[in-house]
Image 1 (cartoon, rainbow, N blue to C red):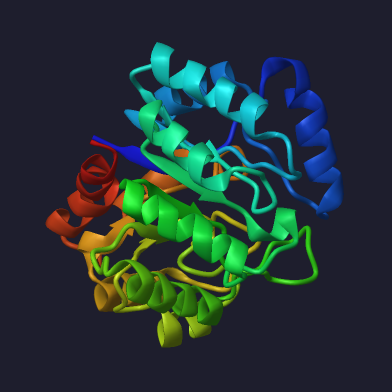
Image 2: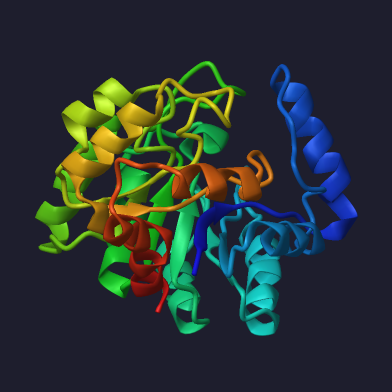
Length: 276
């Protein structure tokens, strides 16, 4: 079984435009699906992916209802898909919005500090993350650089500070927060210093330089981080449509330095536990 913990789709009416804008914002970026729900399902079938976690992104205040209505429809209709919710740090009634997400059955919330222009250790995000932790919602955030932005709003050092602040304010120490892109895109040295070994999950999207242009890691780096952080806190993820799910699955399964047990934990056991 394979669970891809990091994918993106857009409503059919805006998918083509969304992909066009995103591709234009970064040189030589390639989309491997058309960005639609049906495109993701077709990709999953080709890749042998049994379930995908969809991570919506809000870019401005006021998108909460529209974005999460689309996400909720997916969760109601497709057993092979699990969509997280999204929230903007400037939204009103944050506490009520978060608990409404919990009541609606969402498993977690996606944050993208670069798109909101707010650092992850800002008080607004600290409040959101703390409320999610208290509600039993998982939190996944973009971490490290983003080729579309000059400034990284969630570098590993700030991610570590968030973990400390939230633990102090809530008393919750069990891992519930996921740092995407091997803990920090193009910042793997900082990841090893600040996040490896901490009480958090790391997804491996955009980690293999052989299948992703924007990466500062090779297979040896990825395996070392997995071993040092612990395979039980690593999640298989691709960032589809920005990576080809089939190529990513095949590349990961071919890693000889990981045991079958470690691969099973990463490919599906850890994710299944988080979204159960």
